[in-house]
Image (tube, rainbow, N blue to C red; front, side):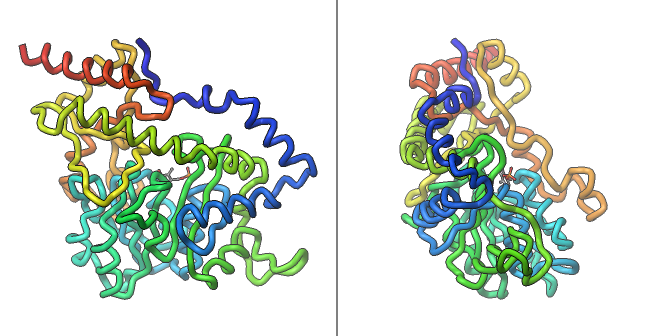
Length: 369
Ligand SMILES: *Cc1c(COP(=O)(O)O)cnc(C)c1O
């Protein structure tokens, strides 16, 4: 049996999709346009916010959110060191400095550790809803309120996740989403979305993504080109209709893994699942003893797996200049050596998940005997 990590070939080999895209671009309206507006309306409704803006990437969503809040040189932004690199990259691109805080056993920023890192330069917190599991927003919003900080959610992995029914992307001043092909709601190239319920911030980013243009010929300020293409918006609108189904399937797959693997094995470790929280499993990440051996064994069984992410951001080369070193974030570093992402995509069959779990059990059984 083969178990692929993802099956984009299957998803995009779809005549209905391309017929829809062809009709959407029949009038040669390739940049912004009606499909983008339709997508923004749908996406805002999906997140329970007033506004959404289609952008060219999740990275620019983070960058423009920080710029719109006036964050730049001399400012500090608190975030987690175990995210995808773009979270810190967007902070650096504004001229501000990323200040990392260690994570909890749910892989998300530990709210109890934030306060110690706050200085007179701190302007914002970027919690990352890693793996599609919402960060502890109650506590994070509480710290932010006490110290007068902005909150920008990196929800790139967390479309349709929620806490007590409230959707990710609706807690902070901004929510940032990616439509990258590897994300749960994806397009056939780069794309991103920014959500907010603040009218002033919305209007500011709307100009910022399009050179600062207030009409065809005049700008309000110098800015960027961070627009979402019509084609990508059409793809997003098409897949939006399937999103409930995709999310439900990923959650069901994860539940099946949870029950077959068990939370108490001496070899693999599944994070505790929380009540009232909807995790959408962009990745299914567990912790495993002797990870390299397990990955090899799975590959020999025809099973693909990945690591998100093997080298924490604070240990990346450019962070040496920021004064970070090994040992700074013990929990994050320990996790980076043990985590493994199993396939959890919507095309998996239950017997494939059972096969993966059997392969894992067999590996540790052989190792123990
Ligand atoms: C994918 C991702 C990004 C960047 O999104 P792009 O659309 O690829 O620019 C940022 N943060 C996290 C947590 C991500 O997973």
